[in-house]
Image (cartoon, rainbow, N blue to C red; front, side, top):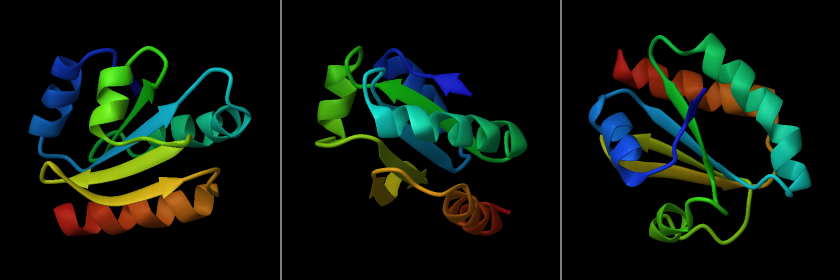
Length: 108
């Protein structure tokens, strides 16, 4: 799973053309920590044609501000450099996998 630490890394991912899921989290956030293994598993499973990256809000306040992150975990589905969907709070693996597959289907 990719870790974004600066805006230039985010821009590279946005330019890749692949659908993207950004996971905004913090180390002290319980729901974020519960979601992390799910997101990491999905990142490995779909690495060929879907990018999943995590962004620590405490270390990347500018990026979090740019995305108007108010609560975490915050998940942003991005396609063609445009935010298509935002989810907040703990999500199920099945629900995320369903959404990832719908973006993958559109991209192929």
